[in-house]
Image (cartoon, rainbow over the protein chains, first blue to last red):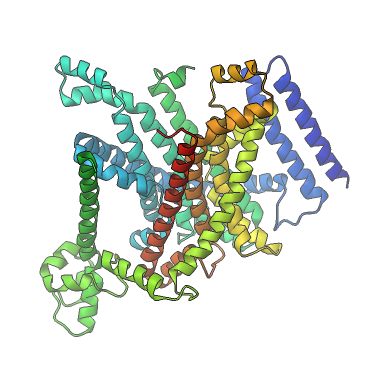
Length: 281
Length: 310
């Protein structure tokens, strides 16, 4: 009973601390903006730990955070091998191929109005579909190894990236285009110096959406067949063996990888689109 | 219809036509090896005659050497890439020709998935809107919860799906609820983030006006913030319902569910029934398009009624 009461106490304390911070004189400083979510996160983890121990929740339903941490530390080599297989080989290569080809396609679509009129509605339509469903087909075509995962990722990221890039390339105003014309700029000059930089916020928006999609595609594709490593494989087999601490360790890896991947793209964006109002604020 | 509209329709039709043509063309080299193997078994003359020789040859060479086999590549039983008309036939067979109570009817499977999607979507958006209201009105929640809601969008949450299903199964919950929970989870965060943005969209001038009217907080919420958030809400609802459908489909994979579009995909991939996979995929696509389209219609009607339509 004591741990349960402890959990309630921790909750009240965390809430009290955060309301003091949020309503105090330093509420708008960077430190508080960083501390408040951290305190919230730590409170949740502490409550989780106390409740699992206090109520004797069996491991097969919910392992305590400490158990997950121990499992994480113990199986670093396995987690690393799975990370390389799924994220580096599957997700990242698919991400680069998919986003790259979507970018080239977007330039073509932008150049010919007919393509834009025809392909953009189709692209918008496809971007809303449950494309993960193509995973079994692509696994059948490209085999169980990471190639099929990369293929799923390519299909998943292609259309969101295409739609965003095309929208971005139309961002430069008529006035700005006219100015380039009066300079007698060629198509490529005006493309490189005006329209591509103007499109960057949109391109990065597409790239950021695609990071999450890439991880989802790579992990879900492994549910349809994979070699005996990979994050999706480990999750589905560990669930089968009821070793949920391993599943949670993989989820921690997935969360860290997803955040890091997104953060990396956001950092590059900051460097490239430093001129945009959203980055200066 | 305006001439620009007609041009747009033509452009879309052309692109769709090109895709279908490309699809037919692609199924020839994709299926040629299987077709030639069938011909060889039937005792017909194939060039080259041994399967071993054909294995390492390029598909295009085989097509050129055996042009009479092209027709058959569009009619195979279990092709690597079924031709469009095969998928269309299968779709027709399994929707119109079968009774909807039949286990082979796609409408039955779609309904299984759709019911989980809608239940989960309702739970997810309901909770999402509540949390967004909390975040907008409480500074503590804004500071402590909002960053997590944003971070959670960068995480492949779907990795949790198999675990949720198995855990709920072990405490005796099965059927529609686990899938609905995954659906709810996936639609929850987009709705929170979009709704917070929407509830904050009234500018300082409008908020000041309400203050000069001496409006209370709840009046400000019902008369300004909530109506102003509608366009944002519908945008995130459309993202949310697509995510919910993906969640329901993925939720059917790990348990080896017997019904639902995800189960059809999985069964098809186990038994090499490619036509079945493709038709399940198209059923899912049609379902997603209908759901998003329906939300679009509701959005237009609501925004028009509120005088916000562009």
